[in-house]
Length: 287
Image (tube, rainbow, N blue to C red; front, side, top):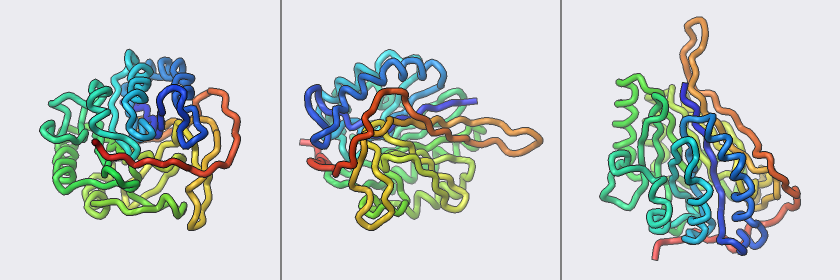
C-alpha cells in the first residue's frame, strides 16, 4: 500500500535573507530536517510540489539540496511560480526525474512519472515564468492522458501532483486563471480513482470536481490567512508548517480501493505572529 509524503511551498531564501521581508525560511527548513529524516523512513516517496525557492536563487536551492539529500525515500520535485527551472536543473537535478521518467527530456520542463511501491506518481510542471498563475500545455495533457491509461491497464493506482491548484477556493487574490483547466478535468474525470495533489494555496484544502478529488497540502512556510473576501489571500501568519500524506489502501467487504489523504503539522516552534502582507513578491523568469 503506497504512502507518499507531500511537502509544498518552502519559499527558501539564502541564509541570512528573509522571504517576503520577514520569514527566515532557510532556518525553518533546517529546523524540520530531523523530522523529515524520520518521516522519510515511513513512506515510499517524498514529493515537493513547488515554490521550493522564493525567487529562484541557486544558493537557496543548495540549502534545499542539503536538507533533502540522503533521505530514506526517493525525492521528486517540480517547480512553482517562485522557482527558476534553470537554477533547479543546475542544483536540484537529482530530484527532477531521470531521462526515462521525464515526459520529454529534450525540453526544459520537469513533468515526470515514476513508480513508488506499485503506485504511479505523476508530477506536472505548471510553471509559467513571470506569472503567478499556472497551466499545462496541450502536449503535457496528451502525455498525462496516455500515462493514466497505461497505469489503469497495469492496475497501478495513480497520484497526480503539481504546484498550482486549478480550482478557485474563495480567497480572491489567490483565485486565478489556469491554462488547460477544462481539459485537465476532462482527463481526470475518466479516471475517478486518481487523486490530484496540489500546493500554492498555503492551506489544507479539499475540493471536488465531479468524480475528481483535489487535495491541496498546507505550506511549510507562511500559511495564508483564511479570508474569503475578494481581497483575501494576501496575508500570512507564522503558524506551524504542514504536510500531506497520500495513502492508497484497500477497503473491506468489496468496497473499491482508493486514496486517503491526511494533513499534519511538523513539530517545530513557531511564534504565530502576524498577520503580515506578502511583499517583495517575485515570479521570476530564467535569465
